[in-house]
Length: 338
Image (cartoon, rainbow, N blue to C red; front, side, top):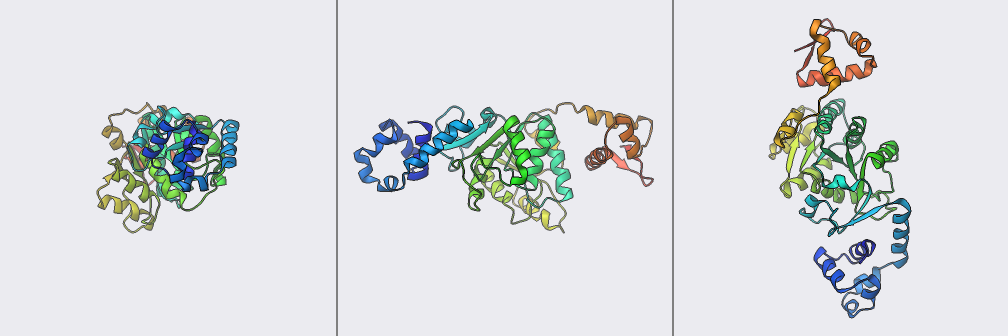
């Protein structure tokens, strides 16, 4: 059967993977199946099947250049295949080869704080330098920051959506969505045109966890959907990392709870890189920064002038280096290398 027909079996019939495999071996098409005696035993599919809907999906797939990857295809993510309830069909836009590279998920709260933004940027930047594919869900907050940082650093990213791959949600992420289509991959199990629905996102999280070797939660309260992703990753035997946070901050309660439940504390991105035996690409900007302090302390304005960078960019990098213990801010307002 064609991939679009396999999608129809899953979508309308709710058949299991084993059932779909048996049906595709016994029947060459949906039409043949509908005319067979089998349908006398399964009125559910016959009653739900919408031929016009399937034809419209097929038309959109061709029009948009969407790739349908079935569970039995070589391009189907190998790690997802061994996870819990893998989808029979994935709708994909972009570079599907990324789905079988070394993928790491970075997820978290939609209500991102300044602390969460700094640690997310630092971790994701290093994952990109290590040539890892960074996966997230393109939601507001941590997810959006993850994709933005990857793209800014010319890395590769995968966005797993709770909508159709042709639907950008939230709409404020339109620019990120378009850049991912050019430099990454957008994936969904939902048919084209599917709008955002609350129940779709927890289901989407199992795909994020399923295609990745590890899941990192950078910032999350206890009610965050990121904890669902972390739980699903743990259930299929994948590693879960969590960034510790202030015990008095609500936005850190989820990460701290994960640590209590056995997640691996992540205080420096080198930990996960060492864990998987990967090396960082050399960061020329970081080298230039640290070399500036050879002759002594400098003000942020002096650094910006010497490197021909915006002051805001310099201050952001100085914050990263402070957190990593590479640079210290002196009482005078100057910075110096440790």
